[in-house]
Amino acid sequence: MSELVDSWPEGFRAGFASVVGRPNAGKSTLTNAMVGQKVAITSARPETTRRVIRAIVSQEAGQIVLVDTPGLHRPRTLLGERLNDMVRDSLEGVDAVVVCLPADEPIGPGDRFLLSLVLGKGVPVVAAVTKTDKVGRQALASHLLEIEAEGDFTDIVPVSAVTGDQVDVLRNVLLDLMPESPPLYPMGTVTDESEETLIAELIREAALEELRDELPHSLAVTVDEIEEENARPGARDQRPLVRVHASIHVERDSQKGIVIGHGGSRLRQIGSDARMGIARLLDARIYLDLHVRVAKDWQRDPKKLGRLGF
Ligand SMILES: Nc1nc2c(ncn2[C@@H]2O[C@H](COP(=O)(O)OP(=O)(O)OP(=O)(O)O)[C@@H](O)[C@H]2O)c(=O)[nH]1
Ligand SMILES: [Mg+2]
Image (cartoon, rainbow, N blue to C red; front, side):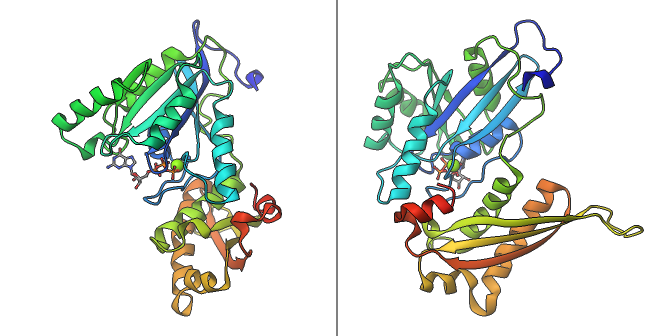
């Protein structure tokens, strides 16, 4: 990969930092803020991230490959176990670990369990105290003291991914922890995820948003086919037309109706939201063909999980 990068400044640093924390702690939002571009999908529902996503921060002085992970939680399904395994695997061989601890919630047993997995393993651990815009100064100050007492952190950085406050501080702290190395990716690359994965994720994000608290965990999305056509000569919009055929998989027949909605209204809304995100991603006109399919109890079925990419 480094042959794609011809030269780099003396003393350039590059390495990996795993971003971990309990579900909904703000890992993906923080990852996107550090990159300055949306790579990972986010939502107000816990367990949004379901795969390990590499998001790359490139700066003059170095490169940080952030590894955004699913939230570590008490698993209830085979899918849950797989997600937790991904988090554990993501800790191997990284140069730093960022533990996200929300400023607006007390440290709980889940956080302590996670800390026991990462602290004292010879890898620097930075506590990112997330969502600081949600609490007052006083509350934040005492929360920081509590976190300090939880273990031997290399650094503790309060940060808000929404206002951007201290995002640059966290970036610099991490950059200092990276080893001297040539760039690991061409400068300017923001992720190594396939287009197909990013599209499937944008559809899932739109569905999570539209379905609110209904069946958030029962959905999986696959992209079945992508076709690209050039714009007709003389057409007003000269961007290519990309036809995306994708499926939303649910666990039961009854859920199919929920996703489709009255007269198909919900599915249309999901499609229209997702289409905007995909158009932005590909800089193209998008035709999105969405189907809802039932993959009975897919979260507990190893074969079906495999087919859905887990
Ligand atoms: N006010 C505020 N909200 C935030 C901030 N960061 C994240 N959030 C919100 O917190 C919720 C969860 O954010 P995510 O980034 O999806 O959390 P996550 O840790 O990646 O969650 P999982 O992938 O489910 O483990 C979303 O509604 C975000 O908008 C922040 O700095 N300030
Ligand atoms: Mg996430």
